[in-house]
Length: 309
Image (cartoon, rainbow, N blue to C red):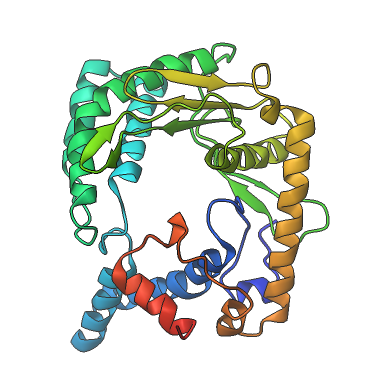
């Protein structure tokens, strides 16, 4: 399955993912430009035999473009990862919830907020620290309901599947049971005030539809297991299943998969047509106002340089 065609490997493009997770230009930029650059930089930096000047240049590249060092992470992402670590620890590893609550707070407290967004991320980090324990508690309750029919709890697992007519696999990672996903909803900041993160009442909204397309990928890769989608905030949780949501039923998911397949086919046509990564990026136009492009200034500067903007 992973015997990647030359026309894809030359762009460092080895598999497809949810097309609604980011615009196509951002996906090409990350895979064809940033990841190979970081791979080379890490190889040089970790090679003790490299010249001091070369290692220094490599470290500059890492600091500028590796999300772990350049401020590309954010409080929402860190809080969400912390919640999943905690629910895994409590439900899968059967650890003491009280101890996990304390350790989760310590883990989140170590997060260094962004320094390029006028303090917004710093304020969110303080707020989310206050919400963290309640979100974990509600997430555990919701996950127990979602997986009540399971013989045992299963955590995150990578799934790969090649859709008909394509050459590269679709790659996706369900959080639980090969078919379900946990989404945390944190308070939003507006005009200096926080409002509790809204739990959706349906899956028909644009943001929720992004999640439905992710779920459709699970469904296509796991043999059609009935999916579920769990949203959690500090006050409650809401579980969506095929029984209460038409967007999670087989006929709707099939339509989503058909759209995903068409999107991936276009991507593969681009990969074949472009001899170089620069040519590949020339086939698409970035949607600079999308969430995927909320990146540190140096990343945006490099992207605009490549697109000569």
